[in-house]
Every structure is written in C-alpha cells, then in structure tokens.
Image (cartoon, rainbow, N blue to C red; front, side, top):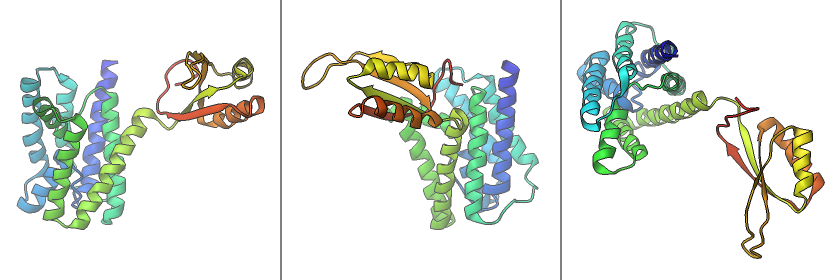
Length: 272
C-alpha cells in the first residue's frame, strides 16, 4: 500500500508539472498556487519557474511543520520536491497549444487530474495549501476562504501583470481544476438518495427490495402539523436506477412525498 501511495504522488506530481509546461506557462495563465506565482515571476523577472517553486514550497513545508505542529509526512515532502524537478527537466518541451482558452481548459484538467491522483496517495504538493492552513490557524478564517483569498490575489496580480483577459482565463483554469479534482476523488459514477414519505410504506419497501434489489432504511420522524410518528424510507440507488425507483413509488402511491438528493459518494455493499 505504501509503495502504491508513493507511485500516486510521483505520477500525480509529474502530471501537474507537465501540464504546467505544456499549457499554462507558455500561455501565461497564472491559475493560483505557487505555479501561478512562478508564472508571473518568470514573465516579469525571467526567473526559472522550477527554482521559484522550490524557493516557496520547501520553506512553506518547514513552516508548516513548525507552526502547525503536525507531521505532513514524507510523501508530501516528496511531492514538494519532485514537482519542480519535473518542471525543470521538461521546460524545453513544445507547448501543445498557443490558444489561451484551450490552454486554460486542458491545463485545468491536467492540474486537477494530477492533484487528484496525489490526494489518492494521501499527500499533497504543498505550496499555498500549507500557507492557507497557517493563516487559518492564526486568523480563524476558514480554510476554504484562505485558499480562495490566496488564489484570488494571485489571479488579480496576473490580471495586472498580463491583462484582464489572462486573469479571466486563469479563473477558467481554476474552476476546471476544482471540478476535475472532485471527479478523480469521487469518480464518474453518480448516485441518488431518496427520502420517501408514504401511507403505503410496506408495499413501497417490498417493491424496492424485490424489484430494484436495493436496501431500504426506515427513519423515525414526526409530522410537524400532527406530531404523529410516521417512518421515512431512505434508499440510495444508482443514477440509472432512479427512474425505475420513481416509477415504482408512483405506481404504488401516487400521493407519496419524495425528496431526491445527489449522493456524491456511496460506500458499502452494492456500491464501489
């Protein structure tokens, strides 16, 4: 398991680094993070991006260990060092596109894919994520807001240094990156969770168990108006099974009250 996790970290970091050189850097798209800072400094001061990333990542890792008092692990340190290394050795690769919109979309996909794989290895590539955790601890600002503030400042700086249009492309890349990370973490398979309130709960329960072959959980609830106890049936099904579930409930009780929600991740028997 440990070996597999290190492979995830190395492969993910390599994908992030290659994406940076093939899409983002050549098109001056600074989509947040230390890579965004290195893109700006490369354009204005001609500083080598890999060296800039090492210069930020390694001190941030050390500061994280000292100030946060936690062991970030060897895997995160490996990712912190290996990513700029791949950026350096692949710096002479020809860009795959000089169209900024394509670069922001495919760059976002590549960065999200790489980071998602690193997360699967239970590590990170350090950088501004560690800075956000430090700010969170000493200011009380939520971690999500800290990340948004840091990435926002980098995008605003890119808009000033390059152009407003480049800043907008960076926002596109950030959005695509976040969605791709979710996709890698959760997967393509989507599920639905249904809460069913019906007067014919036994028939609905039996139909779900026998005709759809899914489990049902009874939740105890009380009506807000009558204060009578009335069970709620909870059932989770694949997206492809939802239409069948809806038809089943309507055929048994057309007056049933059904609440449907997306279930982003389901673990257990019958689900991966």
